[in-house]
Length: 193
Image (cartoon, one colour):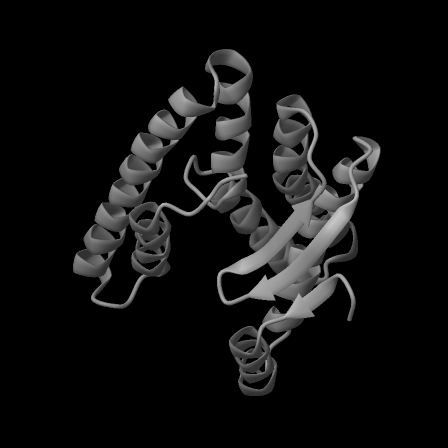
């Protein structure tokens, strides 16, 4: 649909998620992800940037927008986690006021999504913010080196925590998947800008 697209594998996984999970979790996750990406889009608009492409893939949403300053890139990167945090706080307050349990679940999902995206590794928002902030301070070449090291360290720590969690609980822990996800991007050295 013009600037917005969904990859076939992502569409298949999303459809399976909605069909196989009979709880409200897929809808709560979709609402949380929409708020998160909406934060990026709002900040992009405020900074005077235009949307080039929004694509949903297996690894998440990829937003491509027109170029501008690194300071704007920093703000745009952090706007998604900020929107997630605001939704988490609002849903928790609404859950407390109404007693509706799914609002607490929405709060938790949004908090996890926003917090995970703050990790300093590509392609996460924390990695993008770190890259933009370092570019302002020390230039792109130095920023790339530091971001690679931060990404590798973050992937290693998340992976180790996943393995530790697996040893303690004996079940597959999402941290293992998150660690593999980050390692994939660090090893493949995806373009940040």
